[in-house]
Image (cartoon, rainbow, N blue to C red; front, side, top):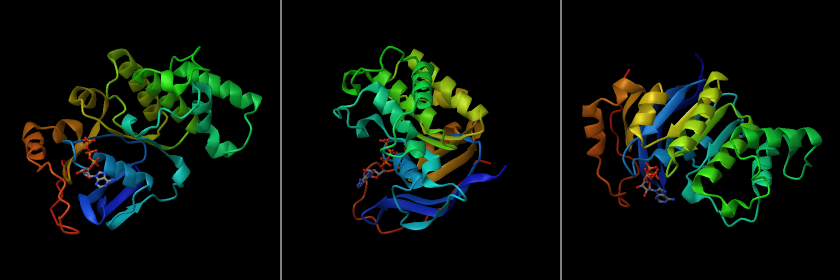
Length: 251
Ligand SMILES: Nc1ncnc2c1ncn2[C@@H]1O[C@H](COP(=O)(O)OP(=O)(O)OP(=O)(O)O)[C@@H](O)[C@H]1O
């Protein structure tokens, strides 16, 4: 299986202080990978590095022939500005920007595709609702509809199920399974280990450094979870620019 993304001794951080150290590995094309770890472990930082929003402090991320627009990224809900005056239809329509450009009009065919994506996440009837009035679960459905239209080959999801009810989680997991069956590469930061065990065959356990990366049942062994939990919580502003650690792979 070819690699969609290759990490070569990658260190990512802020103001030259590392948040994630020395990550080596491959995310295979078509992988369904969960990224787990304690708060502050660097999971969101890793996704920002993968999408290219954060430049590595060290090492290299090889995206092969993938263009930036072929990587779709759903940030944590907390990072979204809900006050932006846009309705569900227009939010979902921005998923077509890759093809239409920012000022390209919406053709009749596009209109049908947008309606189809909205129906695909169960939001028919909400097209003209302002996004600021949606519940958390409804907003997440709308954002998944946008991802459907983006038609990206790599999809990065940061805590897509935080504060989402069981029905919505199950509906959105079905979309993720569909992307997987379409051979898209999906990487999701998750906190619910049950969901990870049930739906994600491969897992990376991060605690600033990679504790384990491989088949989910191997990665989530209790001793590895304990090791990850022992990670010191505070982000050390005085941390040296880089502090080498060994990287462990579960398989
Ligand atoms: N913009 C930033 N500037 C400085 N430090 C940051 C910034 N963003 C994150 N950090 C720090 O980098 C470290 C890793 O943060 P990150 O958000 O990647 O962790 P996480 O594993 O996603 O955590 P959580 O599970 O709490 O979302 C944390 O110590 C955090 O405080």
